[in-house]
Length: 67
Image (cartoon, rainbow, N blue to C red):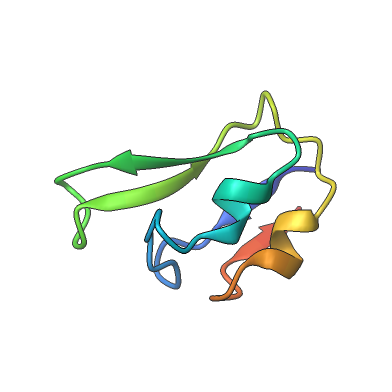
């Protein structure tokens, strides 16, 4: 099982994203992407993610799920 981010719900603000800062595996990263409506996105590195689910409880926008 791995974490997935619903981009429609995610504010993609690297200044306040707790999962970005507190993921024990550093599996979540912020990516500048001009093709996204807000110019950036959060991304999960599934090679690093172990599915622990800590990011779910940390996410202020409830946009992460493990499946």
